[in-house]
Image (cartoon, rainbow, N blue to C red):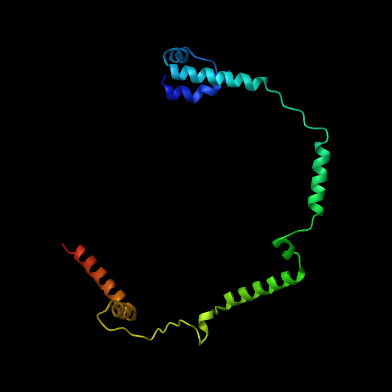
Length: 162
């Protein structure tokens, strides 16, 4: 047995829930590090077996109930107080409905004529530039896809002819 294998079962061996095999005993005699760990863990387990749980105070339940009543009776503070006011709740509901309405209709702030940024799709770039090439590909994409279909047909014909 090696040290890593023993460390895996060391808590079970120290608590007595697993019997100590002859191979384990031999390793504990030969390896001082594992032997020290085993004895230390065994002493810790013995101390834990002796420990007695202290009895709670007889007034613990009474104090706990009083504290809970105080917390329930205390008025809400901070953002929770604002949520309980009907005017704020109504305003939030109106904003939520307006937001959903704008989302569903597709309007945005950039749809106004005075928007800071408006994209004009009719602007054409100079031919030979990257943007110009992309625009021409976008305009001619049907022809491009048709050319791909022709290429595929040519490859199939070449594969069929020996």
